Length: 535
Image (tube, rainbow, N blue to C red; front, top):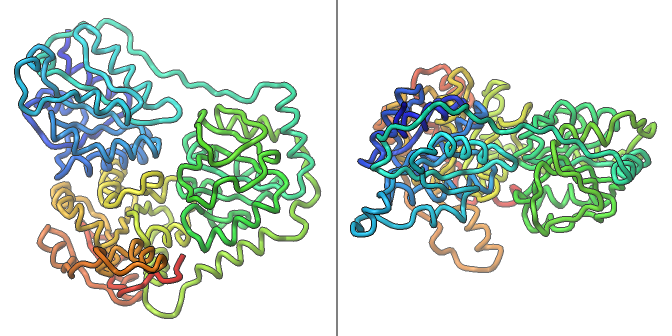
């Protein structure tokens, strides 16, 4: 026999989980203790929303589901943003929460509401643990979370059930791993014929190709067909950004869209590799004729963003192989050399100016960072520019909130990743408003003693919104704020703080940050209107 919470913790440990994040409450004390005794360290954060993003960071580092532990009532609803983000960004997140027993809830109302009803619309599943079926239910939760498309699952644990003994004799279930390639038949024959006669093929990769580890087959196909590769931000690095056929990541930049979308219009075959348009701005609605598109989605995702005459949901790697195996491409794709010109145009559009600002800061950070550095970035103007400029040599090395575009994510994402892979250099790049949202997590960073680097782009403005105000002819309203001494804040929180106003100092201080035994915060003062015409 084993208690409810012990059984839950043991099955999560078996799934590869090693960290859980949250804030204690009386209703989850048994769950916290069981996690610790099962080898899953409970990590105190300062807000449940940040805890959920820390849990996401562990997933990107290990592939195992993240765990957010929330107490009853406000603890759970504090984490709703991170749960919705996990749902949209396809992150397997197990949300464990305490709840009142159903009988008690009939007469006791303090902090009580229908938690599963709140969570059900924003998760892949929301369950209340049932006596005698705990092992089956937690296995089901993990299986649902990691199945395509991955996402969050909520599990309510009634207080009276937490310490109750449960049978343990049943065999642990495992989620089926299916490798489904397109079935032989007329549709596959048509897709192969379409690709074989294509003169101007393009591949667009997305989060599904990352989930299915399709990088190697994407590289082989692009090289064999001389096929340019376009990535969503989540897919950057599937084909290394320094590869001559890589045209980088796109999705939010009007400047990059003006260069990349005309190339797509010229294509006569679009091969979509796990492409999910949830990352893309409105300019990517119907960007090609559906008749030329071969869609290989990792799951059936219903949207109205684009069409494809041929679609083969399943394993992206297997699908790419089935569509391309034994096809002999034309002697020369894109005979007009347009992809190379597009690559040059993109490099020119995001070239580093001679004056200090975000371009110089990002270029200096890339020079000072080891090639395997994992970068996390907040939402905002800096994120759009960085996503165009930062060179990713492998996937999952530029982490961000792409589908929901949540602010304040860079610091907790970096904390979770660094905990799981302490030998990997990690850099969080944030806006000043984003850091002020989650400044309490610097205390979490201090307590965890993580040697990590943080760059804060200081312009004392919600720069992206201010740009939109000006573009629409509206007055400056509600976007400016006062100066925070971030370097002093870092020192007060137990880290190292530095003020940065030039690229040379940034390179020196960032190199030193990677070698320190505590966190370093570099406050890069870039001045007002620094992102004008940047992206």
